[in-house]
Image (tube, rainbow, N blue to C red):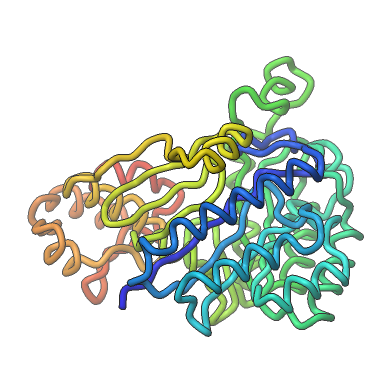
Length: 375
């Protein structure tokens, strides 16, 4: 039986971070209850379409799923388990912010089958956290980790952000040191300044200044050295883990494996189709309750598009792309069609080919240019 990942979007936050442009909002408990009731309907109504799939991963993201009132996360997880063929060893991940993790909430999540928690630390510097409107402190993070471990969680990711205004190497060192001590997986992202976010406007108005690209790259390289020193291997551009602790859900997405998304603004990729739900909570609830479709856009990818997606996503992985798979699946011999480009990239020591895998690990710093040459 084929495998399928499930993504569940919870578009609620306790507050909005200054850099965030994901679909999320701050709402009252009543809206949460109505939204989850609609989400449950969507999950149940969709189950029959995916009866021939085994579910190997579930990822509850947001927003901040951990802000949901007690009982709602178990309701979502148990609904999926009751209506889908969820494998016994399925990876079930939930995103959470440090200040919304208590011993009681952690125990509730653990008891319903969640086995991986992704904690949004971003920085151990309270000054930097306040600067980007994160409403937790570093102490909240350490308390949260203690609660998670006390109830039995062994697979914990910590999100770290680099390239923040006023960020220093000493901040990065302290953050990585502590994240490495408490985690099995670390996602280390560089800040992307998105238009129409408060941070974008603050930078545009001169209230804040972002570090130069060279400094951000220097901080990232420093973080990589610290992570490697602490046993974390880089398996994707921004993701590092101890042996055996890759994020299976995200890894499968990078390998172009199918997943279905539930909730407002959730995206799906099934049978070559990419589609996304309405990015509006009220309209999503209304459509679910009236029996109308919640799909906003749907697109059938052709062979060329799928090949491009495989290249773009696969080259993000340290292992790279498999040349035999490309030939068998897409009928393209990349060594022939891109002979000139591959030869040039090898001379520059930006790629390597080993066991029929083409990896861009050595050239991750210029990955976008490598992808453009090979797509």
